[in-house]
Image (cartoon, rainbow, N blue to C red; front, top):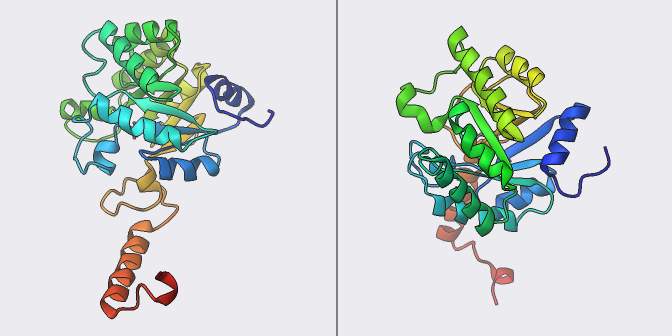
Length: 268
Ligand code: KIV
């Protein structure tokens, strides 16, 4: 595969075909997005996890379309290569397919995102069909759907019994048929993710879905160890920035108290 200048739906399709794993992270601002892009991440998701990471909320439900548009604009300003996907917030696509279509259109028109993502399967197929017919690439999201957390009553893995697993497979096929270019699989058994990945021609991106997906995504603050109180088994921490940040700020506070900052060379 030749060097990708800008990751597109076609590049992701090609990566699946060639067996090249897709890397993805969330981001919500230009500074982090620029760093991830320079590290050659393939996909940056402006997730509605902005609710937890940035807004300090306990669920993703309160995020608004305007907030996603604001954060997506910031992210796209920091990105040259990665594909930027914007999450559709709760209740911006569930009511009617035409409303979903219009809201996806707002994201595409008012930001530089290349695609939108939404949760749900067959019940969203009509909206997905309308969006893709109008040139809006859509990523699906199956398995654990955080916008349905009150209905589930918790964050347990999904698809662990035969009925739930069969529904997830049906939903995945329906999304592909409706034109989705990829599907996030969240917190499902590795073997179910493998079956779906083998069955679909579009890439699957896993989070807590085992090693057989075509790609992997994590929420960046978990991956970098910025959060201390969220430790599901699927998160691998590549850094310990919570401790390191607290230590750095403690030294800064101490230097100010001691009159050691700023020194002469840091002054005019
Ligand atoms: O909002 C988000 O961060 C997500 C990922 C967990 C896939 O949807």
